[in-house]
Image 1 (cartoon, rainbow, N blue to C red):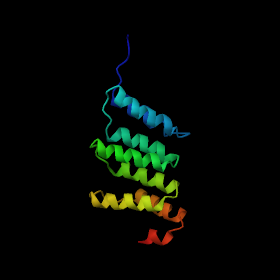
Image 2: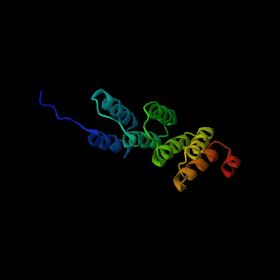
Image 3: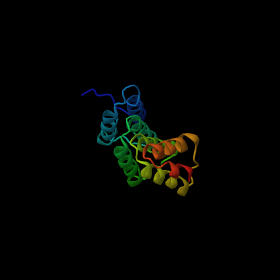
Image 4: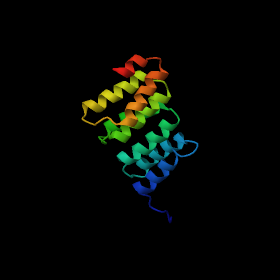
Length: 135
C-alpha cells in the first residue's frame, strides 16, 4: 500500500474549503471525524474550520456539539471558535444560545470583537428579542 500520509495541515485545508461556496458542512464534519480515525490530532484550527462551515449554513446544533467536543478533548477555543458558533446560532435565530456563548467568552477572558457582537445582535433580532441585544 502506497498511501500518502496526511497531516493536520492537509485536513485543515480540506475542511476549510468546505465552508467556501455552497458550505459543505457535512463533509467538513466527516473530515474532522476522519482525522481521529487516521490518528491525526485535530486542533483549534481544525475545529474552527469545521465550525465556520457549520456557521455558514446556520447549523447551530452541530456548532454547539463541536464546542462540547473541544471541551472534552481539552482543545482551546479562541475568538474565531466562539465567533463561528455565535454566528451559527444567529443564522438559526437562537438568541439565547448566542448570548450564552458571548457570556462564556467573557468568563474565560476572551475579548469580545465586532463580528461576535454583531452576530449576537443579529441572533437577538431574528429571535424577536431585540431588547436583549441592548443589554
